Length: 166
Image (cartoon, rainbow, N blue to C red; front, side, top):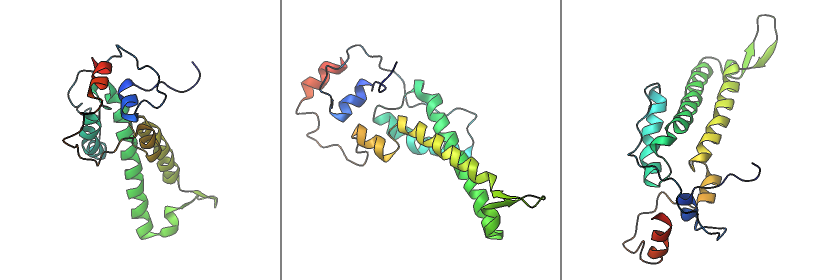
């Protein structure tokens, strides 16, 4: 299948149905509570999970069936954080050692931890974009997580929204 990945109906509604195409009826709607983090997540990954999961769930973006993908985002966050903590510790002792790795043969190359951190950060961006965790993906979703609901939310156009989520 070529072309853009289809967006879930809930995300299209958040975006205001930009293509103005008829929204799908009968799209699966996961029934679940806020997913719990998998047992294999380390401390940093769990911290990130708890920081974001409730907000994503409340936006209708994170459900139990998304648990593995979101866990991978959290794992990559943990890898980036751990690499940078080690690099910061190295830099406190020897700034050059945090950037360059001098081999016994005399060859100087980039510090391997930097490569690991860079790859983990790229992976984190890919996973995060699926959940609207990057500025450009939020623009596409038109989500304003800081906005508090108004008492008037849902009054205008409420019937049209109900039609798509029955």
